[in-house]
Amino acid sequence: MTPAGLRGPELTVDLGAVAHNTRLFRTRTDATVMAVVKADGFGHGAAAVAGKALANGAARLGVTTIQEALSLRAAGIDAPVLSWLNHPGADFARALAEGVELAVPSVSHLDAVLRAADATRQTPRLHLHLDCGMSRDGCEPREWPRLVGRVVRSHRAGRVEVVGVMGHLGCADDPADPCNSAAAARFDEAVTEVRRHGLDPRLLHLAATAATLTLPSTHHSMVRIGAGLVGIDPSGTTSLRGGLTLRAPLVAVRRVEAGDAVGYGHTWRATRPTRLGLLPLGYADGLPRLASGRAEVLVRGVRRPLVGRISMDQAVVDLGDVAVGPGEVATLFGPGDRGEPTVGDWAGWAETIPHEIVTGIGSRVARVAAAADLRRAG
Ligand SMILES: *Cc1c(COP(=O)(O)O)cnc(C)c1O
Image (cartoon, rainbow, N blue to C red):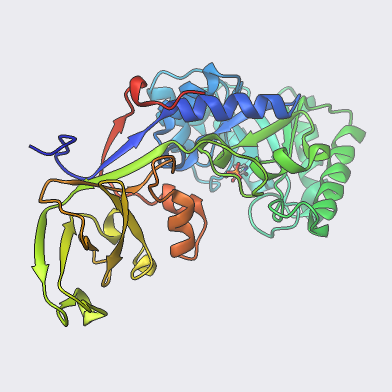
């Protein structure tokens, strides 16, 4: 029997963190809070995060694809949901039938949605989606007048309801970057254009986590919070609570001598006799290979280094003098309050951002809800 009774690698999701973070964002803005639960709620479970956020002050949900929106509906969630990234051939009819609001980034998307509306006798609830300078999703500014013109005609014909205008900021993690004011100005012009035609959409939304924390002028009537819900603050200004703990039991422990090598390429060799622990987790489970030779884990309250290359399915920890045996549970990351590495530490070791770590945990890792009594107070 293992100390914590772990059968294998386990990702504990503490939804109390999501509740805490959602309430914090509510104190930072008067705008409506949309909880963005794309990519399975940033790896925390989309329906679970959605439910927690809605119970703590979020009023709406946002996802990337229609499929993600339909999964929320299938989980019994009937709050307003917006889906903003679909190709013109996506299943808009299903989306409309399930009451999913749609972002419209082009005339061809609008045409596809109108066809689905005719087929299903639904009135689409639309958010006009502007590219504010990232040259990524959203309507190119030079196409905006044509898109708005077509939407206005459809609106006058009673075929669509225009619920919102949305944009996105590409540099909000640095509030001083001039890219933010340029994007905000583009957004304002686009909204002016919409209003000039007599439309007055209730939801104007531009800010995500970072801008909500650092650029109050961008809040408009709604903010879209994803990373912040799960404890990630790209602006580095605010202390949010992380909700994930990744742990795994040691499969084996062995003694090696000075000179013995570890892993593919023999990139690490013991410089003295030591004990190595084998962890049944690798890059297929979300441990970035780039963190090889840099990452640490917590064993019996002590930080110990991973040594050698992280493989697809396994990684090796140099236990040194920590006298533990197989079954001992190592903590790969957690909130950080017991000395364990954090998601942010892993992001640093892997030269990436925390978002990539939390959304990258593989499907072999068991997900479990944190027991309420394990939650930290306050
Ligand atoms: C992912 C995403 C968000 C959420 O951004 P965070 O920085 O994670 O809060 C908001 N809006 C759009 C369009 C997104 O794609």
